[in-house]
Length: 208
Image (cartoon, rainbow, N blue to C red; front, side):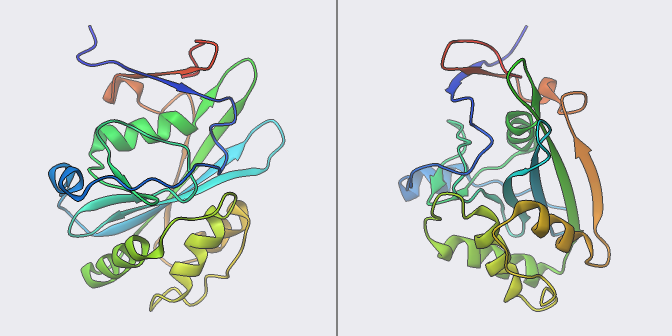
């Protein structure tokens, strides 16, 4: 039996960039902070629309002194992950799994998978990237890849990243960095059992 169940009503365009700005109170953010420990790293997520092969979204998970998700102009929300502008706090393993399940899905009307690319970086690099995403401010609609590529471009060691508006181009460019590991996430391995969250569309139809 599910320990917790969050039914989130979401539009059928949920994989695209297009959310409105949100800034939750600082005490809520402080209470949700999550420290994952282990090596410091960043993970670039690239959502792919399997119906037409286009890039649907880009997001960046940063494991530094805390773990946060930079989801620029994203539509993902969860009651346990407060947001300030486009930075989601409290990203536990369960919430990361929820985010992946939100974007990797296969239904009668849509099909998406996510390319997950991870790079271990020095603690000071992870911290710098985290500070940059926190300071970036609200990202305009459809500017997910542009914001991430602009931030990374100015980080030492990431000078080869080209500023782009296109998630697929950003993902391919990121994959050229030495040490990047890649995983494909789809409906077969998006680990719904790790988060006990059900997503429904506006008609009440389950989409995960």
